[in-house]
Amino acid sequence: MKLLARHCSHGAPALDDAAIAALLPQVPAWHVEDDHLQREYAFRDYHETIAFVNALAWMIHGQDHHPQLLVSYRHCGVAFTTHSAGNHISENDFICAAKADAIYTERASA
Image (cartoon, one colour):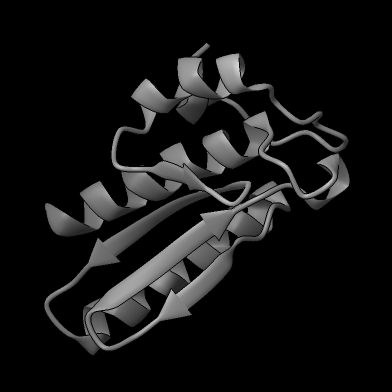
């Protein structure tokens, strides 16, 4: 099932390297670093950055899976990891990454 159609589940287990490699093509702009699934988004100005962060906040609240965010004037860095999986990457991280990309794409085309 595609990641966008999924919902985060409580207690998602950590993924092994092979499972992570199999899911990465579904979120090609993301990369793994220090047990985090990470991406940086670029915007025209601070207003667009904050609008994205607010839209992202609604989604992650609904998924109950909260990332680390680094917000600056024209950029927002997002890093997901799953605390209940020992601070390793789980499928929940990929689900939220795909949903974050969909929000970004929708906002960019508006």
